Image (tube, rainbow, N blue to C red; front, side, top):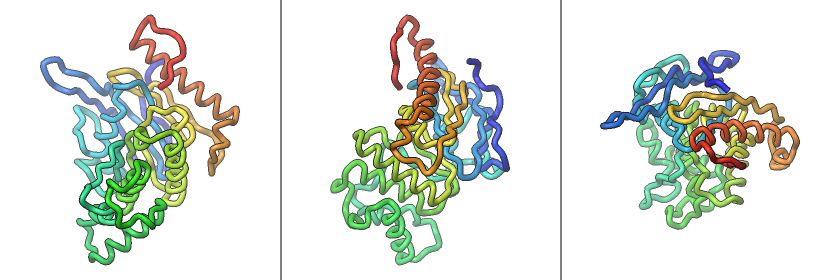
Length: 276
């Protein structure tokens, strides 16, 4: 299947626009990571990016977050070009990036330090978000006292506390065990449905992408481009039972096969089932 040439069509004014983003890492042997990626995300839409390792998913997310500069192209939020990180975008990484010397409450409140709020107001907002992610009993715990899933809940609460309109997530559950990962997917679904955020989610887990998303984009091998757009027409709210439905399995198979084609192009001569 040929790479998509233009932006995906989204009804209404897009919340996030990614226009022909290109990225080349300079050096003795320049590496073209992204070869022109365009897509649009509507307000309150959940979109996932999947693809083979090294296809540029995380690079694209970093550019959208304003943490890396593109070689070409533009990123717009509500019609305005971004020029770096902003409070309109919250970011959650696979690594928890919590301050080990601060409590869960203090880690969340730290994200509010630039706001015109009193210490009491910051504490109130932090406590509200601890309730949101189900950690009311761990407000004073340090990161070393928390499990991996709990740490990631704190990271999600911190990314949401200043009320961004867009949440960017880079493999946020990749380091968690299978059961905790399922619980975190359910939590994220509830948070997204209550906050009505626009979410751009990077994952290697195809089942996770199908379970969470409204649309899933498959990227080509490097230089990364959009290869396929899959609309996930499954009813919401979603439960784990949906993962056993024929419709879910068909969507998963389509995305697996699209990624598998790219895997075989990267490693010619290797056959069999490939699971990314």
